[in-house]
Image (cartoon, rainbow, N blue to C red):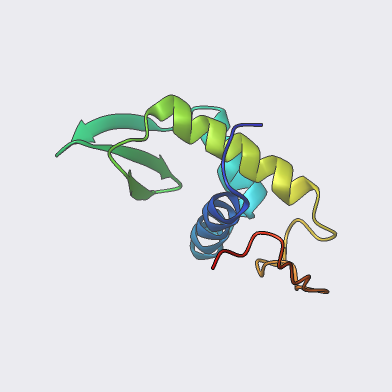
Length: 111
């Protein structure tokens, strides 16, 4: 698993879920297609653009300029692992874990 933050992985999985809802697929299927490289990538205005077409429809995603196609595949793999760890991968909970206990520390305080 790559060094992606949990919120970044959740956001990517959420985007896959939203896209999957529009095309009748699960987030796992969308991310699996990304990993299987059933897409084309090109650079436009310094950004990586991923395009895929299936069943007469097509979709394009633009990613931040710092992300390469390899980074995107690594993020998709992290999102798939995150989905697999969910109790219901087809309907995951995208909210962050609730804070159960706050611990106040004064040993790092400066005056």
